[in-house]
Amino acid sequence: MAKFRITAATKTNIVRAALGATVLASGLGAHMTAASAADKQPATAATHDNNRAKSRETKINVTASQVLALAKSQVGTSENAYGGGTPYQRWYANSQRAAETIARDGGSRADYVNAAWCSMFVSWVGEQTGARPQIGWDAYTVTHAKWFAANHRFGTVAKPGAVVFFSWSGSKSLDDIQHVGFVEKDNGDGTISTVEGNTGNGKVEERVRPKSQVVGYGYPQYAG
Image (tube, rainbow, N blue to C red; front, top):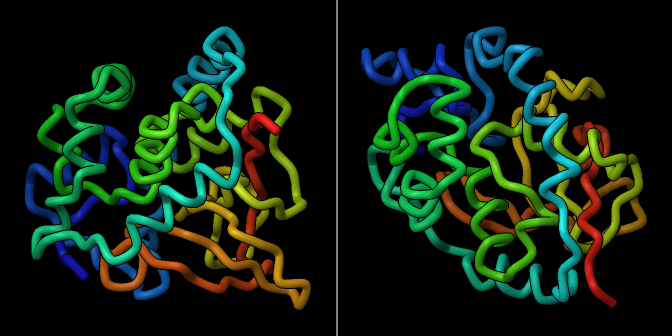
């Protein structure tokens, strides 16, 4: 897994990336850092995003099965030695949302090219399937989760196609979220099967995760 990366597109982390600060990514997920406090999204910015969330929502004609099929088709896609090179990072860096998050967090489009990309992967799947209005888009896992919460679509039940947010410490605070992916199924044994980007050695992978690491789930309003 690449040594040089930022865990979220926050202003603090973008500055660190520009200075070449080394952030060691955890083998359990690329959003574990030695200084997690620096990765917190300022409350004012998150609140601003959440206040706009409802106005951006629209109905979609996309099913959970379609979203999962595309996510699973990406399994094996890997980052390069610098933590970049994926289609998800390139797409996000050139997106309208990147301009919005740069205005929110600082930095530049180029900073996203080698940034931690689990939330960008989820956002990309939403864009490619036409489900983005319900899946949302952001490079920062905490803000992505708060978007769901602001729309009253955040909960604790695993459902196929739900967007699952993790904290490796077992915290249930949205501010402690470190990683994100899609739920494939609830295994009924205290674990869930998932499809995630930027996991393992910086790849898209199918994983089995304990529910104890789940902060909560975002529920896109899929068709069907």
